[in-house]
Amino acid sequence: MIENGRGKAMDKEKQVEVLKYFLGRIYRSDKHKRQLDARITDIKAKGRTERYPVGGDPASIRCWVSDIEGRLWEQKREIGLEIAQVMDILDYLPIHSVERQICELRHIDFKPWGVISAEIPMSRSQVYRRYRMALDALLANQRVQAVMKEYEGEYDKYIQRRAERGGGKQHGDFSK
Image: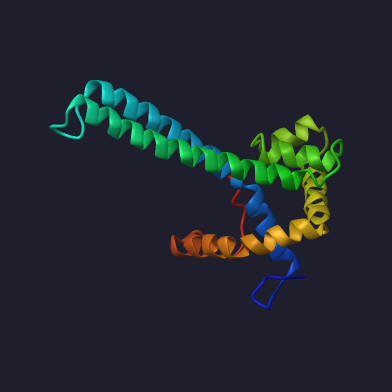
């Protein structure tokens, strides 16, 4: 168990769920990045064909589009930082280990378990067992524990939002 900064200790299973949530940030960030890319492309296209803001002169339209693009690029930069944080955590696993390979295939390449078991190759149950070993190894690291303490509140909010939307159980698979 690790202290969560509020004087309470997180149980082992919750630590694992917070870590999986943290590792799933790349998937969520990649999805958001693709949405921002599409938005930038759309704004540029509309800026060339439509006149916004309505009644604005071409210079103000270009300035408006440029401002929006700047904000979107800043969001993309923040997403890049989130991806780097996840990769930093995975660096605590030995570079040539099967456990790291499984985590990279799952959380960086977004591969489903069936594809991972074919690429390793080993059965899905063996892959998942090694994945769980990787999570346990990561949680044995004090630096990883400290990061998980920081993200426990974010994870709790995520679970609460899921429950409010009827998303089911207390803890879950949120990487995809």
